[in-house]
Image 1 (tube, rainbow, N blue to C red):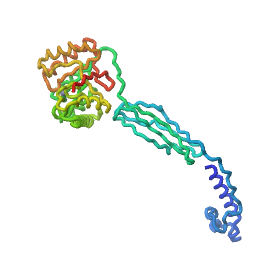
Image 2: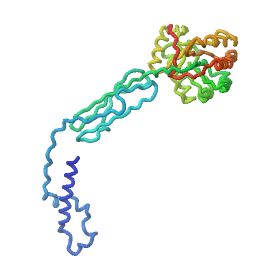
Image 3: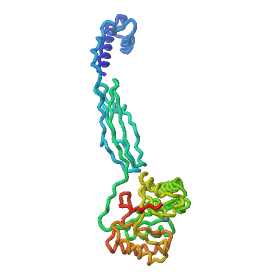
Length: 355
Ligand SMILES: [Zn+2]
């Protein structure tokens, strides 16, 4: 670049000399500016006024360029990204002793799929005009979030199969006690309810779009088709992209035997995709009994057996189960428990797969 500037200065200098020495201007018109050739015109090199008088010295050739550009990665060269979150390259800079800033010429090879756990390598390459190349590598690990264990006595109360007849009343009840829980929802036309769940500060997770084992577990493809439908519905209604899911019947279900091995495959696949599937360790048994006192008893009896109790209940469409919720909350609060909504970092209960 320096060489070019020097050359240009010299050309302009010689053109100036020849313009100042103009002999074509008539003597009487010396003071008439309009008649005189403009500076631009005067600077134009022509055949007759070519700057031949001042020779341009040949620049001394520089020694051959053998130095590669300097390529610097910004941020860490090993990065960890939580699956299903955004990955933004921390950036890089590239400079060369002769060519200057080459940052915009850096090529990146490789891709990071945030929707699949694993290790990815990004290779950055940049070359200078002489063909000297510099490369750098960054590894990006897409992974499940680390578990954060809560302190004190906690209860993760989870409601499956809603929204339903009692969802709104439940939300009022939870609000009355200042309690946050988790709703694993199914497909429902009343999408307002998903929004209300989220607005009230509860966690929303995906259960299934159609609660029909024959449909959901017909094949691996059928399962993911159903899962995507409920995830899309949740997102469209609430703006939340939840990663928490609960399999219909739990991960240990045998109703999926219609498709041998499906639970083994899909539990592994959803985990690689960055979802967290959550089972339970305390059951209200409200699919077994319709007796409210019995339901309450199951919950109260089993909760203290676990450090991180995850309680399964279906109160949104079942009056006899709904009727047990208030007493269970009162019991929990009276016994020093804090009700927490599940997050991707919560300690998760996962059943042993049986199919
Ligand atoms: Zn269910």
